[in-house]
Length: 337
Image (cartoon, rainbow, N blue to C red; front, side, top):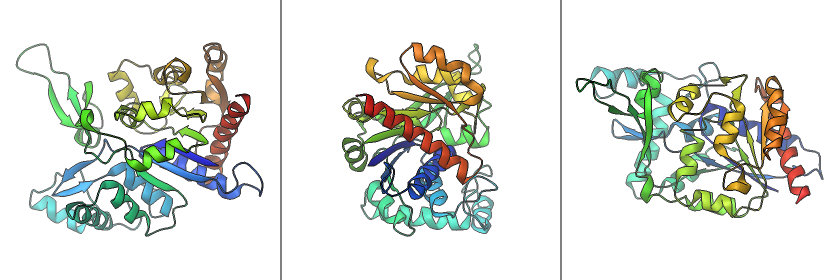
């Protein structure tokens, strides 16, 4: 079996870790036993800083799966120091609201050196993940630079016009507190899915949509021209996991992103935002939290295959159990075809 996961952010990384653990625990002969896992990762959060290419979602995935991530902070490397970042800030090269750890800088320097030597982002990701046994294969959604920017709504008067910030400034500096009018992915029109992402989708037996930000993570992956076409041609079931539990975002400020595009912070609203694949949308199946069990019947009536299950990934066991539920629903849908 080949499982493809669309993911971004810390929640996506933890879910992928759960999928990997579920595969490792599968009994011989079980459907999950020996399954290959490919992960198509959002690259819209990427940006240039101090001459270095920073890829937050890919790095979160790399560090989480290699056991190098800081579980207390939820991001970055464990045992990190920040001496170089302090020097960069003293020189005014980097802003005080975005700190780069010394170990993390090693990754960014290696990445940038390979990019400047002519390697593609896919080739760089392949080299980075060779350092550790991840148990999955990571693919950037695209090899093209597609950085997400946020248009901040100005006041009605000319004295306060709308302005545009890189997503990282809006997210990290302002904690998404500035009302967003819309999100703009610069360069998206000329982008294409990475070769590894397309190959994985063409050969998938099951596609899972991680509980990542529906707008700036999964939404950016889907916005890459050709990605939705590849998904539409996909014969494998597609099962998503809600990033919303009882009307609140599981991690981060996804509610601010949903509000900006007019989608309620609600597991049912997110499912409808993604849409049914039979109607040109994304999903066949959808997992909601037990706290949202009341949504199952109305979504079932609309054509979604929905299950209410425990969604909190408090540890490796609960993350693996969630992954098993997602796979089970996908296999059930596949057997119905």
